[in-house]
Image (cartoon, rainbow over all chains, first blue to last red; front, side, top):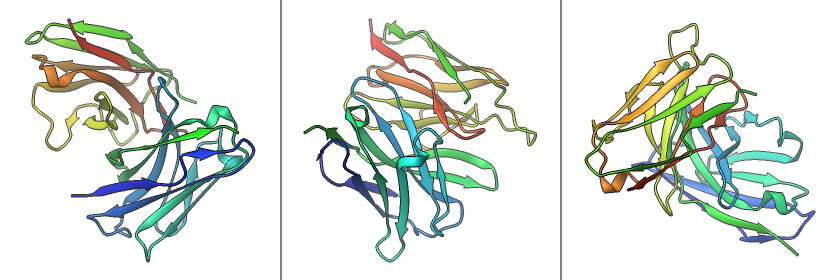
Length: 123
Length: 112
C-alpha cells in the first residue's frame, strides 16, 4: 500500500521560507506515471493545488505560486520536498503531499494522500 | 483558470436516504480522448481527502457501489444511493484537464 508522510517545521516566521518533505513508501518512487504533489488547505477553507514533481525533476506548478515555489526529489531517499519562500499569514494551512497518477493522459488524479501537516506563519 | 462551482454548500441527509451533489465547471472538462477530467473526493472530519470517483464516473478502488458519478462537459453529479453515517464530511470536485488544477468549494454533508 502506497503511503506518504509529511515532515517539517510547524511554525515559520513571516518573510522566511517554508520547507517540507514527504517520504514515500510502498511503491517505486521512479515508476512511470507517478507524480508527487503538494496541496494545501487554509483553516476552515477549501483545497488549493500547489504543484507536483516527477522523479526526473520536472515540475508542474500553480502559476499563482510559481514565483515562490521550489520542488525537488531525492530518489535515493524516496522523498520529495517543497519550499515556499517569502511566506505571509496567508500561507498558514495544512499542507498535504499526495501521489498523482497520470499514465499517458489516463487517470490524472490524486490517489493517495499523506495525513497533512499544519504550518503556521507567525512571528 | 477553470472555476469549479458546487451545490449545495450544505446538505443534511437522513441515513438510508439518497443524496446528490452538483459540480459545474466554467469550461468543458471533456478531452478529445473522450475522458472527462473530473474527480470527486471526500474529506471526512479530521482526515485527508480520499478519492471516490475519477474521470467523472469510475469508482476508485475500495469505494462502495452506493457512490456513483455521472455527467460530461461542464455538468457533473455525485450520487449516494443510501447514505450511511460514515459518509459524512466535505465532498470536493476537482478538475484535472488543465493547469492549474482546481477544486470546488466543497459540499458539507451531514446527518439530519
